Structure formats: C-alpha cells, structure tokens
View 1 (cartoon, rainbow, N blue to C red):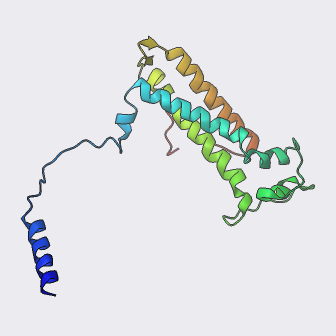
View 2: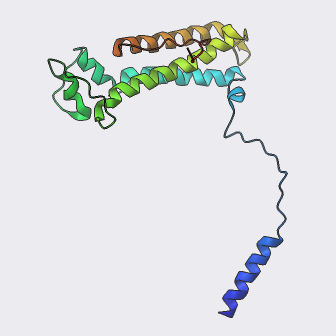
View 3: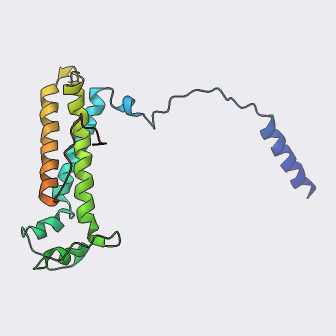
Length: 178
C-alpha cells in the first residue's frame, strides 16, 4: 500500500512540476476558415469537382428512383426504400414525416442540388464577382471553370424544378434574407 501511495505522489509531483507553454501559436490547417478555403483557384477547382459529384449523385443513386417512379419513368416490383409508395397509381400523398423512410427521396435531391449550387456560386463569384483569374498550373482556365460552374447550376436547378413544386434560385450575389 505504501508503494502505491509513493507512486501516486511521485506521478503527481512529476505532472505538477512540468512547465506548460501557454503562448504556443500553431496554425490549424484542419479547420480552415471561409476566406482561407476560398482564397485560391486550386481549392476552388476542388470545390467545383465536388459540386459536380454532388449533382451527378442525384441522378445515379437509388435516391433518384423515387421521383423516377413518380414520373412513370420506371417501374418496381419490390418495396426496398419505400419504392411502392412512389409507384402506386393513383398517386399516394407524400408522407411528410421524419419517421417515413422514403423521406430521403426528398431530402437527398434537395440537399445535393443546393450543395452543388453553393460550390458553383463560389467559382462564379471568384471569376465574375471579384474579377479574379482562375489559374491552374500556370494556365488561365477561367472560361472552362465558369462554363463548368454554370453547367452544374443548370443541372441542379433543373433537378430541383423537376422534383419539387417550389425551389429557390440562388445566385452568387443573392442575399439569403430575401
């Protein structure tokens, strides 16, 4: 018992005698701020690629099946992910409840489309709003980046208009308070 007590005292003495450096300033690259991420073309190019992936994801995942069933673009023989709910004729009212498993057919297209629009708007703001060149590997790719950003916006807004009764048009200079 005496040895355990001495070990505890020695450990406590060791930790209390250490000098703690309190003025250590280290830049944390794992948690960048808004202006740091949107401060160069290389990062914006990655955001643009991610935006395209999010918008294409709407069309290629199983989440697209719900609204394709409602548009009579395909049929189904099973009830995986609540497919039958969307395939019934006449149409059933959409279950607007967080407990409804088929809610992902509304939330995934909505969230993915606006994720894509947000990234595209960052690139459009950079090129059109701030008149900055989009330089990648020493080459000005402003026209390509701008065309890609508008293509992504068009795909996302087209998806929103085909899936939902109402959606918001958000441009790079939109104020979200409106």
